[in-house]
Length: 120
Image (tube, rainbow, N blue to C red):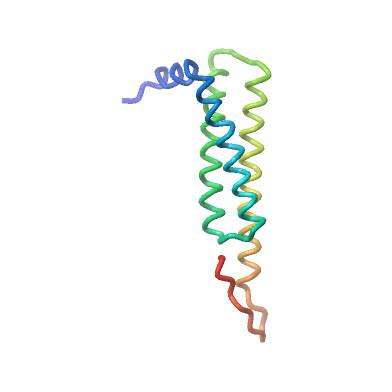
């Protein structure tokens, strides 16, 4: 059985290393999602990259929660949790934009022929 206190302790002991990996990974994955939406990449690519970026953001937020459980309330905990929340919101917005674009391209008005976009 997984001991939660051991996982929390591991998170706090290796805080610098975890943040050094998760912050850039979070930012780069979110940037990748935004670029793929902007360059009109296939919707499946956008969904996959958004899922990876959201996973990074959730891990970052869980890491911050380990500090809050022992009572550490400082500026870095708020900054990191805000970064995670902003990245989650940005990725969800990118998925919504990609879905709307894909749905709009595949919908056929009555009496007209619309070419299907291969990127959906």
